[in-house]
Image (tube, rainbow, N blue to C red; front, top):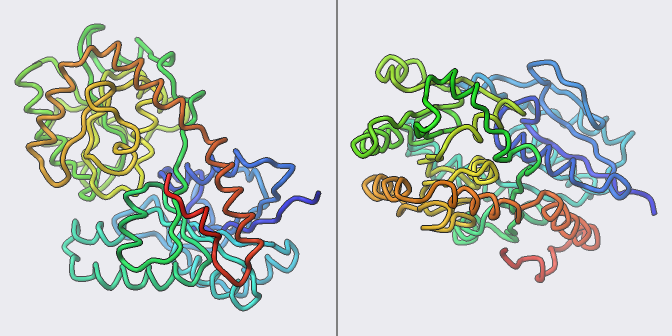
Length: 386
């Protein structure tokens, strides 16, 4: 049987360092190459990258406040040219920018079935940058975009419920997975901890993600200071970069800012810490939560997205009520009371149940259902939220 040809359109992909790019790559790598032929239409990478599949690189513009990301430009003609030779049977639009919008228009003209993904809560991000007034406009535009596709794939039941209540049609949960071979407790590195200038028995809290307002970084700092009232030797290591980093480095010289880490280096950072603090309330999933669990770290987070799906309170972490900073700090304080060795083992067990192979099988179901109904809707049995 000939492989199914899928054209994936995205404004971000590796070597970009973000959850959307990393998750998309992991999904593609987990698909059976005997059953799928992949074309990726994307913005031109900003650093060296050797393509693993057919890639079509198009111009992009740097996003204000996100210098490491780009937004695609309208490119209907270039997309049609790329499809003339590849002849896709289905189009999967991973981002809703101008590039994704061009692909949607081109696909509809050609009668190609389209699936879309909803990865980023743009409507929530706006309030962190004093743009709350655009929230309803953004949500309205996103709803119109996604409702012109056969189905919208989201990574968590929480996101699916919100979108469905907001008038989005045919919303389906496609969870993210985690690479348990890369992220594992065995990567704990004493020499790295020595670089952090911590003792073997000194507890280290870790944050991984953008150092930006929408990640609720001030809550991380507030929680750190409260925890240090219980354990004065507790050290915080922050992995990532963003617009708040320079100011925070000046204000909090005791916090170690490690910059962006990727691959095996990032895995060592996870495994060499003792607990994971993640206060973001803008995630559609929050892949870092699963990476931390896979690395054997108990997690404190808000009761939403990946944390709500995977963290077992009192066993491998604690969850806080959304929008309640005091509750977040209380949850972190409870985390310090856990037996970190046992909690770490439990965290690893949790992550091992979330493989990318299982996610790829679910994606395969959505694709095959869409292909049987190019002018209709995805069959009801695939609307079950997992």
